[in-house]
View 1 (spheres, rainbow, N blue to C red):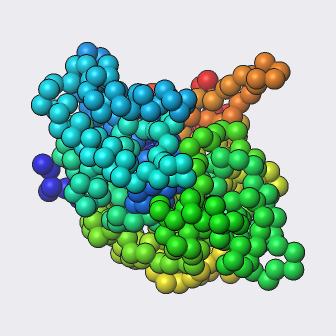
View 2: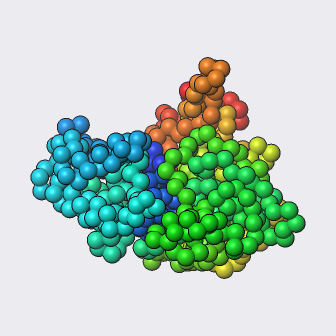
View 3: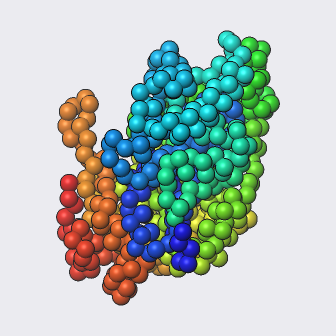
Amino acid sequence: MTTHNKGIVILSGGSAANNLVDVFNAVRESKDCLLSYIIPISDNGGSSSELIRIFGGPGIGDVRSRLVRLIPESPPDSERAAVRTLFNHRLSADAVEAQRGWYSIVEGTSDLWRRITPAKKELIRSFFNMLNLEILKRARPPASTFDFTSASVGNLFLTGARLFSGSFESAIYLLGNICSVPETVRVIPAINSNFSHHISASLANGTMIVGQNSISHPSEATALQPKPGSRRPSLLLADGDGDDSLEATEPSDAADAVSYEDDQLPGSLPTLRNKNIQFSKSDNEDLPARITRIWYINPYGQEIRPPANPRVLEALRDAQAIVYSIGSLYTSIIPSMILRGAGQNIVASSARHKILIINGSLDRETGPPAEPFTAVDFVEAITRAGEESRGRGPLELPVPPATSTNRLPYSSYVTHILHLEGPGTPHVDRERLAKMGIETLRLYGRKVVVKDDKTGEEVTLGMKYDPKALVQALEVVLGKRGDGILRGAAGSCLGRRNTLDPGRKRGEEKHEG
């Protein structure tokens, strides 16, 4: 395993950054170094929500997603391809079919086992069988039974391995080996814990939202209303009503209390008890105001400051480059940055380059219609999270630019920004970023166009990075090629033909669709 070169660290979530895995791997190969993915464990949506409800433990969906995505490309009829299909498989959305599908996997009769050798099949099945036994032991019909609807088979395996070994990182190690993840690539959970860690968010209008899924991709419409006359942010409960009192966080009747008794810690907030199995990542209501802060909470809703995984701190401290990947700003990147030790190790890191890859479009977290985020806002949020991690907070947005610019060490967290320019992309104020000590590099990209279901008209949602251009941009910043070309080239255009064009005027670049 290569260890003589300092590694590259990627802070990211799951699905969005999965699209850039090949890009980061190409850069890793060119730099001949380790590549570490730091993944938050606060996800409480989808298949993870049911596992957390029954077994507790961390939100494992993004970790599993990255491990499976890292399986090396193989022919469709190979065992590796079959392993990828198995761990990417989701059970049916129909409850009866889902349970039938699960039992066929446990019994070894499912077609998913085809092309997986007997030795590996029986190893994997042993953890499925153990998890199945644990599911049966915890069943309390009719109040509390496991819901297999749309369950991720990979998440079920990772949970079984964690319960068997008693160690989340051991489970990750096992799945990584089964998936043939290269030794030079590491997937590191932001927190090394066998317990659930949830986050809350405050909005500029005084509202508080509990749980990552409710912040990013709510499974149902949320009534975001602060409690009238309340002096502090109202707590968004499961039914959407805000209330300050701890009594309001308890089930409303005895039947509910019994149904949660076996699978939840006392005091767990109703929002965190919900099944968030079905939700949409694209069709969500807009937030009425900007998110101002993210923090971790205990089962009673009280703020806590958990420490970062020691392996995360080591990776950050020894990195040659730190990259903030595309994805959800407040639920994919910030949860890793506010952990104790994370901010200090980013600031004190040996990394000369701290690169923010700006999203090609705005999402629910960064796109309130009245005040959409700009590149400066992304940098502000990242810097404030890091400073809060260092004990210099909590620092909530917004703060007057004059004061914040004088006291926040932006370039200690972000030195370079890579971005696209086109319909739906966040605005990049190059002059202001330059005053903050940050260089910018504009890349060509492709438009993301979809058809409106109602009108049938084509709608541009944003821009998508061209992988080759992004690899080249990262290599330019890291000094692999064109070492001198970046100096003084803030706002340069990086095209698909491996050229920098610092002379092209803004607005003249061609966006390839």
